[in-house]
Length: 572
Image (cartoon, rainbow, N blue to C red; front, side, top):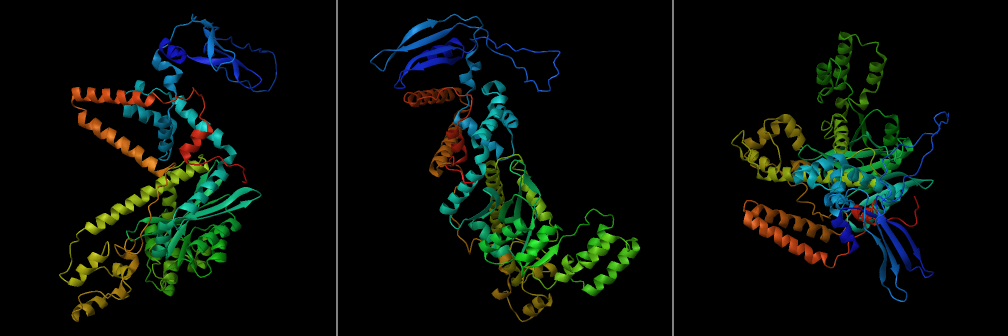
């Protein structure tokens, strides 16, 4: 009752003092106006030379307001009585919309801020977005600072328990998600390395893992860990993730552990590994992927003679002896014969020039680590380096969902697409139905898509009336249905909280928006809809206990937002 009086009156209150009996039952409670009390006096020595940093001055709301209410317990009963009530204030009362209760953030608002952060939308921008969605800033009761304080509260609750929480979360996924793999390593009770992959990424590696690339360019500054995604190219020639890792340092030992975890999870080495010239990565690849070819990527994309150089380097059909002659001529033409770095690159030419890998299938599929760098940039679009590990993982899940949704769209478009035939041959029609993109007159495409090295094989087949390409000549990795025909995934909801509850919430939002769209242009029906909403609200409010005013988000809410529990005990 008093809380309703406070809200209607237009002022905020706070608990001043309370006392208890020996059995911990509250004896009396003193609640005062939020502007009651006196400001604390601060002494300042203007002649002092102290180097201690002064605290920032802030406005105080305490002006000595005497409005208050005191409750006392009635002995022998669970009831209380009003012992004293002072209603006079020495300050103007506020609008109902400006009170703390109006600014209090509901769970839905906190969830909106956390969800927005998974797309790299910070609290300030989330507040602007909310105001735009509502139509006016005055319709958004919490202020920008309230949105910003949520991050502070999340960091306060999670704190140094972040690493243990993420390990517990990943272990839960391994226990409940089908074919999910997670491995981690600790040094002196500190999280040092971790690697994870799910059933879909394993399928991608099984079909597209002949050539992979990895590079560590994104760092979580909060935990000083680098993110290492393993990238392959799918049947749409799009980059896909086949595994991910986090490392506390970029040493040979860390990369070796990561590659061993990758190998143990997938069970086979890639045919070709493409990386930059990092010495630690080079040594780790040699130690772990003993049967894989390791190739360095081309660093010359910004040099003036890049056109001539690219034409020389990326000719996969050029024999090594021809390449060496043309290299020498190119160096002479640009006066680079004595350049130390170019001399070194020529010495290690067999580790990065594609012509030396022409005997490896798909060796020309990935030419630089730009795929890896692009993937890091893609994740950077959804995450911030200052994020906690839990926030990073939520952002990672969002970006993976985006990537897979794009691939599903490409799969649908590929199945529905009708290609313009270049010839009247039935063999081309068959090829267009099997693979996403196929050009019969392109020798390069034929080599990539089919297990054939000579274009005249088609001429011979057509001459002898062969109407279909034999199945054994078709590379499975380029088929439209390479994934759908061989794998059936269990799509597990990765949202925080109970999956069924999340679905009901989304269905409720959808139904509400649909109803609103139907009655939006009919004022009478819109008023009726609003009236029924209020009736429904009163029905649910009748047995709902509102939480007290809290200036900070507690641990229970944070755990619910992230779908985690506070670890007890903490091992990391």
